[in-house]
Length: 271
Ligand SMILES: Cc1cc2nc3c(=O)[nH]c(=O)nc-3n(C[C@H](O)[C@H](O)[C@H](O)COP(=O)(O)O)c2cc1C
Image (cartoon, rainbow, N blue to C red; front, side, top):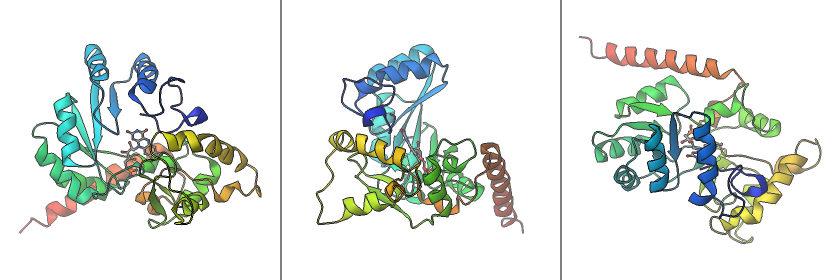
């Protein structure tokens, strides 16, 4: 499911279906498949059966994000090929259980189904930790947002580069469901007990989609005031995203640090 959208409603998806609904994503699935995607991943619930069937028909693997062991069991019963165990540290829609606790719980719950670890993974040591907890690999989101190739809004990218790991919040203010993002004047106002609570999903997106688009547009003009409001989904790993670099360098550094971490653990077993 895509979290961002034209008019705040599933970009590239149906204009008539409710935002974030399965129906709104049917056109996106067909576009992804037409581009030869080799895997399709779903969040916020098990993938609808017709989407799994469509992917199976074409030999495309399916996965789903889980923030609890029960979610993972539901995804396996729905027929996905692999699970992404995404801990609370993650950017975007995320639950309350930390990655360290979640990965082994999910690994133990789903038997032979491969599990990727996610949430707070941006370096090789974190990758080694996830794999030590039983993950078959890792799944990263936030760390790409400050790469040279990222399409992150320039104002938001600068905020990410300067932010610490304490500067994110799980807020319902963008979509109606808890999603980790950078703290900003926008999240501060929605957190203020004297202002109305966010609506649920999808109504909060209907309410705020247009405003968020305008804020992002205005934030390109220095001094507009919109810079203070602009933010985006990002996880706690933002605290170590301090330099814009090519995505290839992120990958190489992660692999090198992973090897060092595993070798160093191996040395601890030497007698
Ligand atoms: C900007 C942003 C947008 C995201 N949008 C989606 C999405 O539309 N669908 C989805 O399944 N996961 C989405 N995620 C979650 C990622 O797939 C991934 O699980 C998460 O980023 C991993 O944690 P990390 O941010 O600590 O790397 C998003 C994450 C970020 C940072």
